[in-house]
Amino acid sequence: MKDNYSYNIQLRCVVCGSEDHFDCNEDKSYIKCTNCGKEYFGGYDELVSCNQDQIEEVKEIATEEVGNDLQKELNKMLNDAFKGNKYVKFK
Image (cartoon, rainbow, N blue to C red; front, side, top):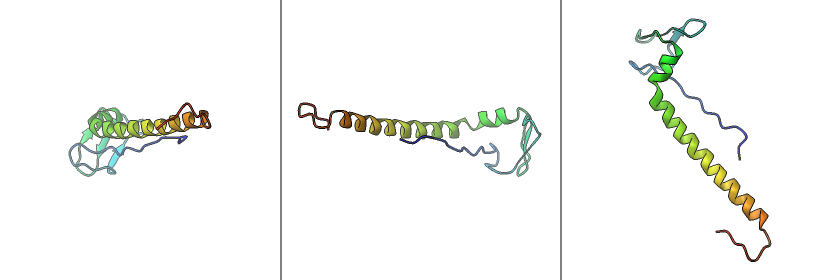
């Protein structure tokens, strides 16, 4: 099983869909898309809330991947624990 599951999510402008044309102040309390001029007065938190659909998609992918890896690890552990036992079989 992996030691680290990390995912990068590119936040997008809700107007133009740009991922890399953002200008912000130091504490990210104000963000402006330099591509279309959309201003996010709520800053980073507003931009994150506008991208919840994309975040949920990545969350579902991560949950599935971690679940599959856990299932494989559990199966391996059970097979190793009962290796050589003729009364217990796993399929």
